[in-house]
Length: 362
Ligand code: KG4
Image 1: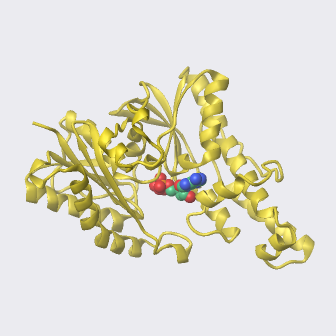
Image 2: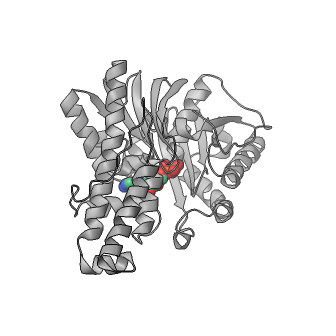
Image 3: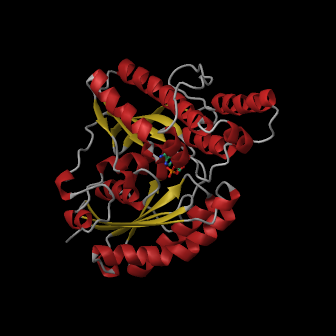
């Protein structure tokens, strides 16, 4: 009998469902929510309402694309947390109801572990050939997967961590941000520049045209493997404030009209600073622990500058580097399915009394 996992991810503003059959990804469908754009950030109440609207069509499309029926499902894996409670409640309640209706097992997954397990997703050739995973073709299969132990730089809108991954069941955070996450720094600075939400991809795009050395922003000096990005945010804000004062201007728009390359230069310098800070601590951890295999995960791993920095790291230190396909960087259910599959193999199931959590560690 085949092992069929239906996975559901609803921790923030993406409703996603995926189907994994005998360890192979057969579908991964995501509905992103545009409703937050005009507010410059995710509005929790709107997010949970949008999840309610999206979850049935998203799950039904995922099952259809995988050619799987309800009766075939062995277990339902869902993101239990961390995330927005209202959003998590939709996915958790749906998973429980669906598990009851098809009398199958239930598996709770930690969202952060899911991001790391994205490195072990193996898409089916059918799925890749159908064009469902941007940027991948059949010749890329099977994908390269990290060997244990490895270090994973987990960078998203809510987290910046270095995780020592000993196995799918044994992960330890050895460093993390003491204030803001890298993605949050990108998003907040983008907002200062008047860019849409989420700002990370916009900064990435603009940075390609800018001078990364134009602005020497403050870099944190934190002990151990921990990070801090709040000082960088302030440094970015004060740089703009000082330029406005010097030139007697009132807004970033006016400033950019006077100096057209400014926005791109600010983005390039900000991105370069974030990357240098992230890579320096990762290198220190890898050196201290004698680990020569490093991976990157989470939404910020979509950043082209960071991806290039990982490739450079591999060449410079003769290290094995693992960068996930774009489709598995931002929130997606494929990674939840993969983490759920490992739990299935370990007979690690949960009951219907399980409740979501907003905050937790790996
Ligand atoms: O992992 P994710 O989808 O959601 C969670 O936070 O859990 O990450 C979202 C974050 C946002 O801060 C977004 O701006 C950032 O990932 N992001 C990027 C890029 N794409 C997404 N940051 C920099 N460059 C990108 N290309």
